[in-house]
Amino acid sequence: MPFIADDQIVAQVARLMTMWNDAVGSDAKMRATASGISSAAGLNDLQQAISNPSLIERPWKMLAAVALRANQTGDPGLAARIFGFTHFWSTQIAPQLRPADWFDMRLDKVPPILETEIASIAIGSLRQLAADQVIFGNATGSMTAGDLKLAAANVLVRAQSQGVPVSDTAMAQARGVLGSSEP
Image (cartoon, helix red, strand yellow):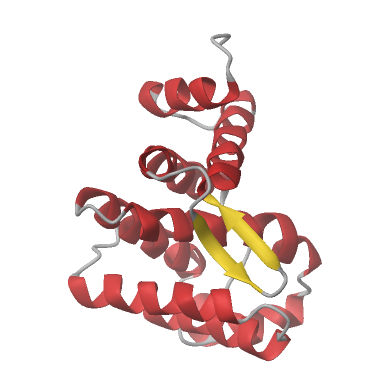
């Protein structure tokens, strides 16, 4: 079932992305942000997931829907932040998760098809932003639109090579970023 992102959800996700930016260095804040994302998507406890395992993907579906809405309403920064969060979660957080972590956060690994969808939405948004525009930044460093544009392009190329469907438009944008016209 598709997730519909209304104005309230978009605003809530925007606040959660700011909360994520501020969570660096604090495991408790990171967990609270992840839990907030799950709750915003309607996934509040383990019993729900046991009754309906498809709910585990709901937070990622929500983020994809909000990224799309942000892109459509002229907020490329929010779409970029959602991809930045998703990419960081996939590469830095999810590989370290243990089963008990799920009880706290209710946020699992990003399903490849949803990671690809979010990257496909974000690459267009990221191309609208200056490469040096900071998407996430704090005392530990920053992620710029240029960094994330390259990451999104790599996610899309990898996804296609693994058999995950990628739209022709997103793939062309990814190749443009990577400077390649090869299929």
